[in-house]
Image 1 (cartoon, rainbow, N blue to C red):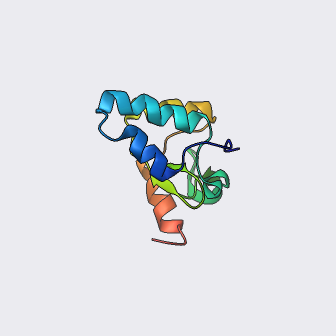
Image 2: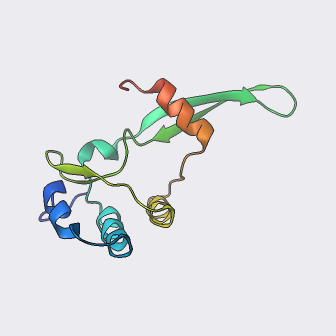
Length: 115
């Protein structure tokens, strides 16, 4: 749950304005780990991958994916935040998630309702 008083996207922009990459990453990590992101990012979307096992049997796997890129802020005022790999891994680990492979990204894009 997003904490009351957490910075909005606009406020976060001002907090990190002028920071170098090395100072900005911990600020992004702190906000992400505290749950400061919009409500719509809290509901996962199903994405199906199909393939074949080693013995040729058909396999379908359903992934539960975030509906958009990570954003910091409130429902009405948020900022999409690019981050370094180390930060992204820390966020994913914190929430018990994985970063997607190329095949996952392609499936997510192909099955997205909005492009």
